[in-house]
Amino acid sequence: MNAREMADPVTSLHDVALSSEPHLLQTDAHTVNALSERVLKTLVLAVCGWSLIEAPLELGVSDAYAGVLALLLSKLVVVGTGLAAVAKARFARETFAFICGASVLAIAPGLPMEFKQSFAIAMISTVECFTKAACVLAFGVVSSRAKQSRRQ
Image (cartoon, rainbow, N blue to C red; front, side, top):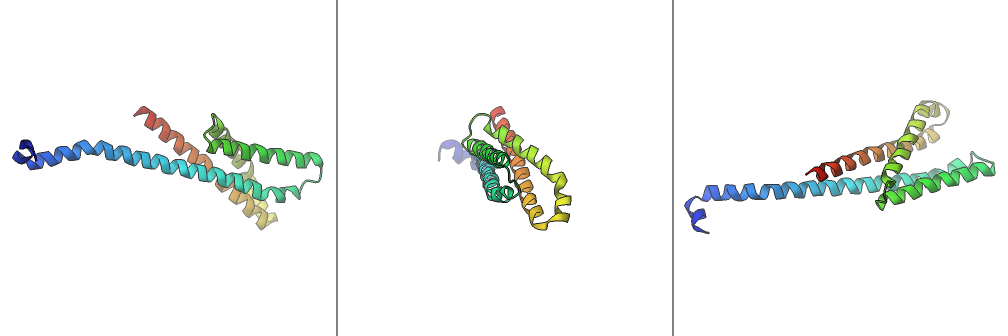
């Protein structure tokens, strides 16, 4: 203990608490950023995985070679963009979020009709919609946190 700490121990502890406070806040922000980053990567991989899982179900609908080629190309675009988003390639996350958002807007309005026709197919579409919507939300959170930490 130095002479100042001995003279006024309460103020000394208060100064220590104040000086370490920004460090704790910065560590907490870093932890939240890392967690949101992991959640986004997990959701991107879940969307890619689900896209591959449902591919055989979509193949059964299409008989023409052009339909099969279009399906394979669409899966390649989704998985390729998703893997690039996980690797943080330039514009990949924005592109993947756009693809997911557009897909949700295309699928969601048809869900009530799908539930009337086939519960199993409707559940597959519902899982796809929720994972893609969660991915878009996670992208929004990660981007806003990144902008916020750049400002600080």
